[in-house]
Image (cartoon, rainbow, N blue to C red; front, side, top):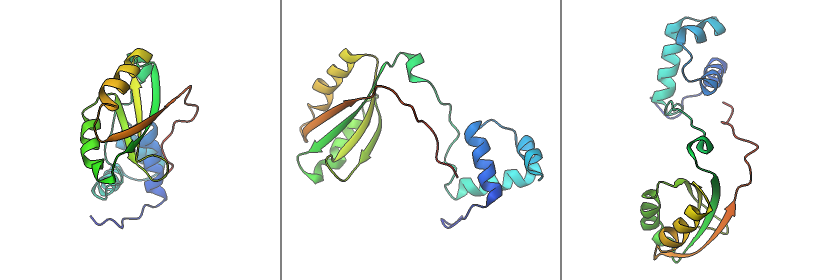
Length: 153
């Protein structure tokens, strides 16, 4: 499938429904949209092949699993060429749940989840700031997440 696949209104409706509940049966989607389950299946497969749908996931609540601290760490590298090596080291840390290579004040911007402040302190001092290629970091604690959503198709 080519990368120039363009979604139409039916595709948008399917995506919106699956984002709300990825377990929605094809037959239910078909009934809601006045088409056959086969049409839904074909549309979903085409969007998978085009890379629009990349996976179906179970979303967990980190706080219910004991992760009480969410923060963002802006990382400045000693040199731009250090990015691949630092990224590899960050990928090895399970507390690093997202990382972005950015323009602006930071080279890398990460989202971190830890069980508590002590765990964050240990991670920061002994695992992140100890990476030789990191020049400096800035930590921003998240107080709440009032907006959390998928992009509208």
